[in-house]
Amino acid sequence: MATPLTLRTRTPLIGIGAGILAAVIALGVYFGSSYISRHDQRTTELTRVAQKVLTLELNLGKWPRARLVSPASAYRPFDRWLVPKSQAAYWTQWVLNQDLAVAHDKPQIRLAAAHWWTRRVPTLSSHKTYTTVLLNVYWWKKFDPKGESTGTAKVAINLEKTRRGWAVNGIFWDSNPGAGPDQPDSFAYDFDHLVGATVPPQGDPPPLRPRVNNP
Figure 1: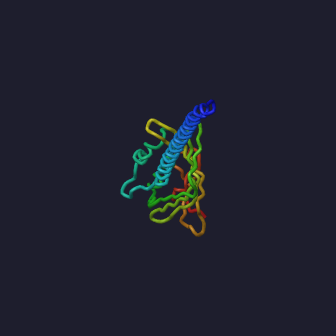
Figure 2: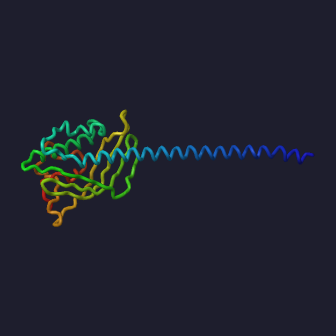
Figure 3: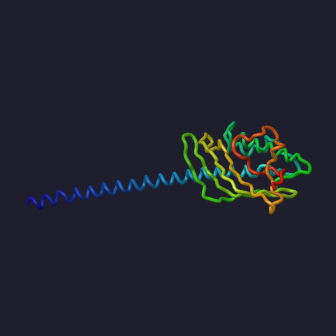
């Protein structure tokens, strides 16, 4: 009689143990998938902000012919995305001042169109107070009345969490303009005729300034 009693006692214990194990596995799968989902959502959000700022930067200088835009109004689209008084803000204002100076030239040379596309999938690296999104891109710009600028760039964009959401506090360019005999109208910044600070606040400026003809 002892043996059947022992079997009857162990059977529910085995069932309970299997149930607990299944519950632990289910919880692990749930929390694991939730973590992956949050991580993917954060990656998507940070990449979207970095790409938005890159698009705004490459379109600096795209002024209407009828009027010359003031620095304050030209900078306004960046207010939502750049941390005030950060390297990103100073760097953007540096580029803005150069492009506004070009807009005052006669005859005017102005940006007509700009486009960029990715060379590689964006990568993220987390730091103590910020996250870096590295964008590896091709870019192309067309100027009026003539000229264009093309090339590749690695753009490191640092983001921090603010009360309004993610914002950029650093932009660092490493650009390689494509110039040569086959591109006689490829333009870059004219470092002999800079307006304001002669050195950009960290990072190479993107080749946007349509004054120098690269040999």
